[in-house]
Image 1 (cartoon, helix red, strand yellow):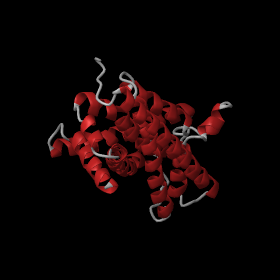
Image 2 (cartoon, one colour; image 1 turned 90 degrees about the vertical axis):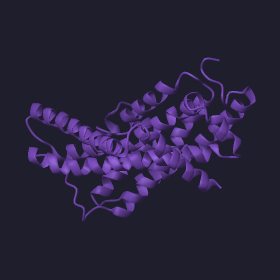
Image 3 (spheres, helix red, strand yellow; image 1 turned 135 degrees about the horizontal axis):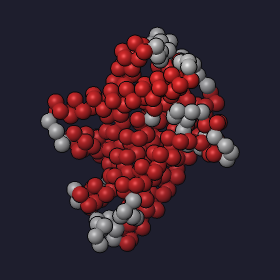
Image 4 (spheres, helix red, strand yellow; image 1 turned 90 degrees about the horizontal axis):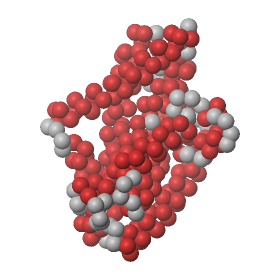
Length: 276
């Protein structure tokens, strides 16, 4: 039953995100969006390198991989941050989902996985385009496909998607009890994660206690493991921290959602719109 609901959530998520255009236009959008993302990253780095007077390939690798793979948490969290509002007020189907026993969590996970699939397409295209374009400007990603730690890369992506899905569940729990945070909550959350997760600079350059706080987020260890796997390396300590922070996130998200779910049912807030 749970797997069937998750599959249906994935299918609905894909249809919702692609139904605004015909397949050719949507495919073009999926391709053009990461290309624009990559070009912006490269131009910013080139301008900064020109001002500094030298090009640091290691810094470019760090910045590029952080910005590109951060697409995963951004895509998943923004999708789930809007989910409750869309299904409650826009499509008015949240009450129908609640009719099915124990369906809401599986549906949320399914929608998160649909977003993860879209994010994967963007990441793959970004890396391919970067290798084709940036070598002409003296920028090297230093990624050897024969040296990548593929088991670690795959495992990190799986654990990361799980972690980000449950981080998104925290947002859905909050939005179950509110009506006006759907547009700002996900933006604030991804902004905080961008600052604290080591996307463009190492977390240890932050002043205390912010440096220590950054290591409490699964996204920090996710990006570090991604960088290590692309260089064919492995760090058991970072992997352990990734597992621990993900487990804590799952427990916290599940507890908070159960509380929000019960309160929303009791207060009659499941299908209550903002105008009420």
